[in-house]
Image (cartoon, rainbow, N blue to C red; front, side, top):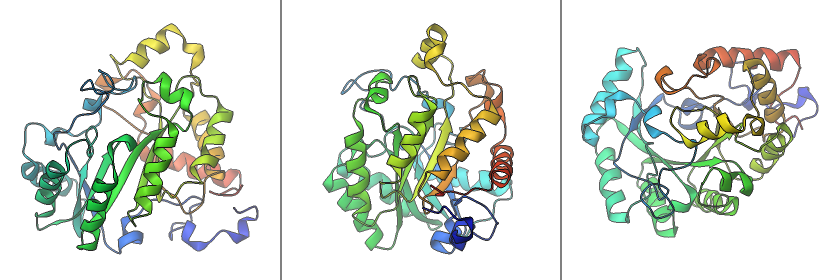
Length: 317
């Protein structure tokens, strides 16, 4: 870690004079790549009765995927996604099929092969990003994903970590412990597959001190990227009801307090872990949290300003 700012490697700045490591496909692959969020028709063991029903207490997947996926086949979604980004002026050298909705390895291997290879057959799709739970992979599935990389496709896996603390995972009805998460990340990275993670700040029972400890634990894992989200109380979820009953169990923050916490976390996070997001957002119809509607770019500016003011950087401690 870096205690002297003069020793920060230039790779941490990515040419933007930043004090944290931003996620960039250009840096990783040398080309502009745009993710196309897809609904592969998967479900989740926490919803189909294998582990439970209703999902994790914080989850409403409908709040997190774009409208262009609804009611379309995979290839129709890819075409719609390309048009969606083109209309917004987002230029790309190619696209990644991002299987995001629910747990995208939660199916027998032949089903996964059919869906992934159908996406990869599109001439503009360079690879796939697979979002899933750590308890929904095994050696056979990971070996298959590794074989796609050997065949020339870009393949990445993103795991919902959410928390490194077993008591939190149990409280939100996650259905597995952190040991399962750590094992899946190590097994995936051991096959040469870039591994992303997703964590939520503000889950019930977690303190600021726990979240700083979490950053150190995450730094011991072979993660290549990390998405950080604030807890959003989605309407109708179990966690919204829990907050209404016991708000004192939640670490609630405005944007300024949240940015300060982010700086503290980044200081303790390994500097080569690329930061994909620092906050999440959902359509206003799904939540009453007013500051959660701040644009991601605005929060990024606040973060960059605060890190400058504190003269600090990712991985300082």
